Amino acid sequence: MTAKDPADLIVYGGTVVNATGSTPATVVVSAGRIQSLLDADLPLPDNARVIDASGSLVIPGGVDPHCHIGQRLGEYAALDDYEQASRAALWGGTTTVIDFAIPDPGQSPLDAVIERRALARTSRCDTALHGCVITWDDRTAGQIEQMVALGVRTIKLFTTYRDVVMAGPDTILEVLRALHQRGGLGYVHAEANHVIEDAQELALAAHRGGSRDIGETRPEIAESAAVAQVLATAEHLGAPVYFVHQTTAEAVDLVRTARRRGVRAYTETCPHYLTLDESVYAGDHPERFVCCPPIRNAHSVTQLRSRAVLGDVDALGSDHCCYSTTQKLEHHDDVTRMPNGLPGVETRLPVAFTQLVERGGMSLERFVAMFATNPARLNGLPLKGSITPGADADLVVLDPARRRTATSSHLHMATDYTPYEGRELTGWPSMVISGGRVVLDEDGFHDPGPVGRALHSSALPNRLLT
Ligand code: URP
Ligand code: ZN
Ligand code: ZN
Image 1 (tube, rainbow, N blue to C red):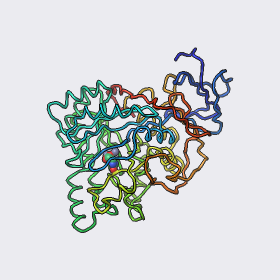
Image 2: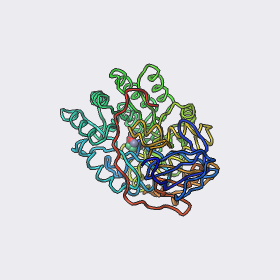
Image 3: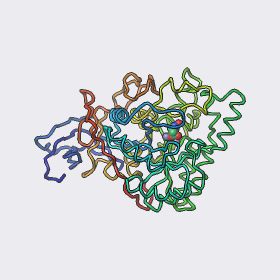
Image 4: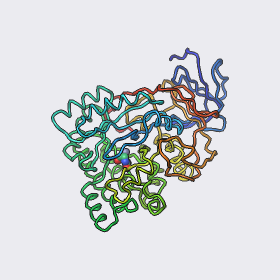
């Protein structure tokens, strides 16, 4: 694409919002990329499809840094595949999904990456991958080297789920070091397993180990303890680290305090931790809300939200997992056997927009940073997450005054429920453009076919990125 190439799409009349600022502008798209941003009052170029975004915001297509697509973990497999998950993502204004290659028992981390890459060929939007290491052995450094050659530079490490995916502190140290040497980043699920197992045992012995009791079995202190331990490892190594799905202000504050000491640590949270509170476990369907860490009490939710509004949370991940109510119910009386996780790739934008921008007063720029710009940056995807000349033409048009009620029958994720059933939300996209293709407009969804590219992550520079 050059400045001379003919424009094929023009989005005019809207306010373009980037993490760095907002301005009324016309976005000119050519060959799948953003060719230019023109002053709103300049005449429109000829011979292109013209989209009127008057009165709406034009934001970068979302980058969801945390999706489990058709995940197999323990006894259960999530119900979607890349085609379904990517369609749902696009319906919800997310144009890049980042999935996890979690090895099956006996499978190597590298083989898990190769398998996921093949599955991703049916994706309707661009994709990227995180690897996952469970045990460090004498082949792991070589495997990480090969993953990096395949464009995978982020690796998930779980401090919990013993005998399934849990990595010990020595493994975490070695992986953080290996990634640091290769411009990568460790993605850590931080919950102290010894605290959780003890709490689970006590709860089950007292007949309180079901989905209603998930909060008791995974206390907040388990999260803080694991975050502190991993931060110490990262600080010792001088390595960067990213904490997935943080749920408490205390965990976020640990990261911020470490940053003040020079540790390059990052925080992600999810729409459900900003929106729902533990009362969901006292309702009719507690099993539908079982996730790890669990949904916290109302005070913790308010505190977390205020940290996010202040800018202390770097990224917004959906932690999307498509299990059905039937799967969730099967072992609902024993949280150690249930499938964890909530569907959310499609609702990440409206749920978080409603909570953070509409109700919380967060600036649009800060929202865009969490929703798209920071996840792109932290995953080495320089052409994603901003509306700037040369970037991929991934755009979302939304009218912040338009409200819609969330209901699973109007959503497209491969499950029978949404955690947000009946909620009035704003921030739903009215138009989505992915790689220069209009995939959602007033006429509905236009399936682009399996055009999603498997993106390679670039080396991260040795400095703070958010
Ligand atoms: O409950 C959750 N979050 N399930 C998905 C796997 C994980 O821990 O991220
Ligand atoms: Zn996790
Ligand atoms: Zn997850």
